[in-house]
Length: 211
Image 1 (cartoon, helix red, strand yellow):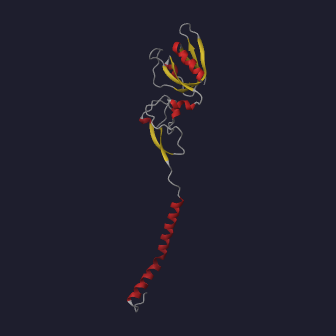
Image 2: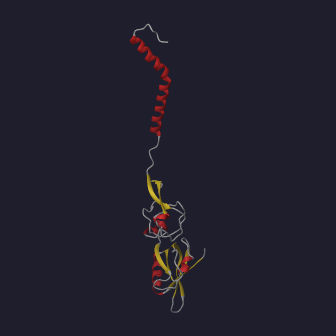
Image 3: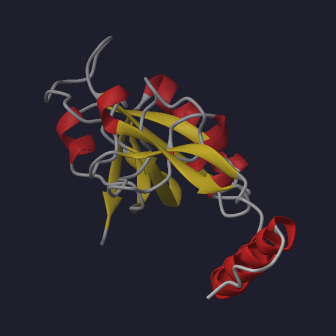
């Protein structure tokens, strides 16, 4: 109860002091909350630096010609983003299968970066006379390349333990010819690459392998 016999000025001062005492707990709580918030902002880590990468929107088999529906953009922490992540993969051919959410990198598509998947290898396209034969292969298979002379039917192994890097999809069976057969991308040594290329000019190339 405020004294009523005091001068007006003193009554106003007492009233203000009375209100401050009543609200001091609320003011103290607010100041404590503000201090805690300031401390959290000081201790919180800085925002993560991210980079946008392309990932497979669904499971994709090797040989797929990528289009926009096959790809999705995802934000990755810059320090965790795979080296060689492809910035534009539309229209490129997968050298091996991708699972949903896997990052598309240069070593997973047919192109100059594919050689990085097998350091020291020479990347070489090989035309097989029967497209159905190419359809039996999968990326990662190790095969022997056999050259057959059409004149006398003799066969010679021109490269051994060659790794298949990419295979076609959706190609019909067909005989050898100007547009027949199918291309398979392989990785081999520089010496064997010369022998394979030379044999391909005048002989039919086939494969033999075991899984």
